[in-house]
Image 1 (cartoon, rainbow, N blue to C red):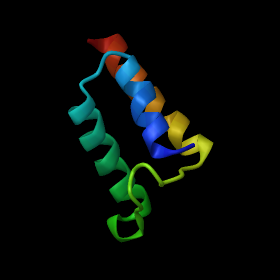
Image 2: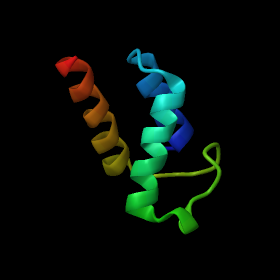
Image 3: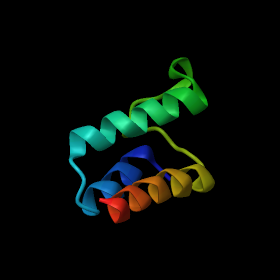
Length: 64
């Protein structure tokens, strides 16, 4: 999945785009390493990682 697609999915849940972008960037920087990142429109992440990040946002939404 492209990171941009993940961003758009999370924004559709009702989250602020800038906050989501910052949170996803921070997570991916920690997991992948900032030096290994590509621009968001080109970056591909595996489905398991994308699902884990999406689940985190879904849980956050349920708890608020």
